[in-house]
Length: 124
Image (cartoon, rainbow, N blue to C red; front, side, top):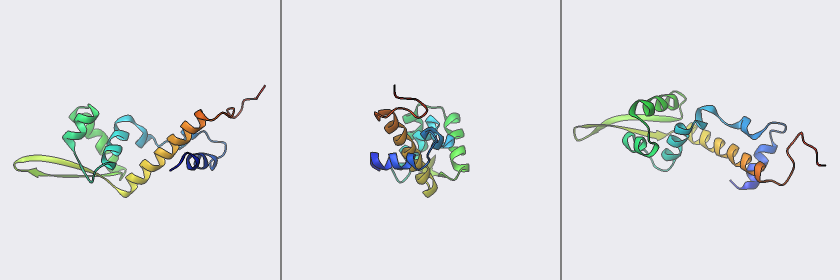
C-alpha cells in the first residue's frame, strides 16, 4: 500500500481519527509481534517467538490463546523427535487484520507528517 492509499483509507472514515481504526486485539505489542513474525514464514515455532519477543512461556501462551480464539492464528502441536513443539501460523483472517492494522498505522503516520493543520484547529 502506498502512502496515498493510506490517506484514502483514512479519508474514507471522515471525521474519525486514524487511531479509531486500530484493533485492540491486534495492536497490543506482543500480539502485533506474533502476527508480523508469523507473516514472514509459513509457520513459526513457539520457542522462536518467545526468544524474539522476550516474553515468558505463560505470557506468550496467553497472547496466542487470544489470537487463536479470534481466529487470527492456528496453533499446531507435534513432536520433533521426542521433544514436543508448538507451531503458529497466520490465518487468512489474521493476514487481513494485520493488513488493516498496518493501513491504520500508515494513515496515522501520514496525518502526523502532513503539513495540513489538525482538524478542529484554526490557521491563524
